Length: 417
Image (cartoon, rainbow, N blue to C red):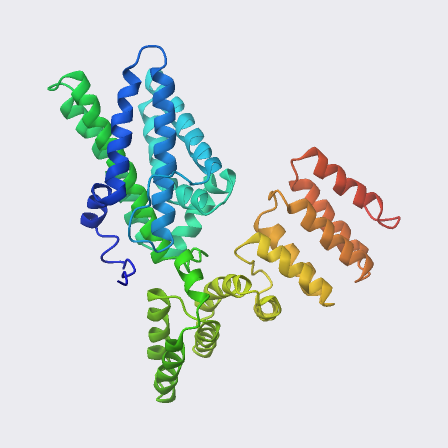
């Protein structure tokens, strides 16, 4: 039986999200973690058991986010295979927030505490989505990341921000209502159940957003990747239909047809290429650039590196500031451009990556590669020195800084260090 992809109206409705933790494997996990909370009552080791339970619960919540974001309707079984590092980073952020909040409370600084809470509510959707898709902690905490996501998906970002706050605040309200009127043990179980309900519901909400706006966020759902492995005969029918509409002069209708189909299912490379062509014909450069990042990812997943390099060359010819959404893909394409003799393009890609994230762990390597090509293949040692100095200023690692210093020392005499 074919499952329908979660749509914007169905999968992200408050009712559906509220019921999601009460169904299937999500309900089983909720019950398991709630009952595991009883171990926290054990003398001595109770705190350790509580910590382990919360960590496992957050790992499972990440599984829910990733499953929904990859197009899976049902909750995953309780295997907690989500990236451990992402969970540790999130828990570290929550611990720091709690510590600062308690300090503000005891120091009688309610205004600072409220400001801190408002900042976290604003950053939370971007923080969780960035961690779930593999970004580092500093990028996830960067306020610019939240602004970028809000700009890409628009008003829904603020709706998600509000929804997360409500799902996470309701268990706290339930605790204040239950604790005074129920025995301590029973109240603790109910509060734990409400906490896990809010945790699972909020992460499912984020998964819906990740899947619904995967193109805007530069994410390729696993369900789409799997579908790409099988040729789709309906792609040809879709392209013929779009061609008939375009022939009649209604390019916007043809675009709308392709766009809606791409949101409903995975499509082949020819559909992506035609969609891009129509966007350029209608002059929608902004959408064409957003789609280009997604198209690059699909091309590389399909092992069409030369075609991806050609697309990137076409984009950067009109917008030199364009940056591939995945730095690893960008570095790969820069190396392929260099191998193909397109040295200027390779340097442009590395420089774009450096501008986008000058403190990326691989930033020094990008700078060294760009400088080597500039010096030895383009005979531009002055430009090589500029790249190396800029990377050195942004570098925070002593070992990487030493590599950059050594490269600067090897430049011809007269180049400023």
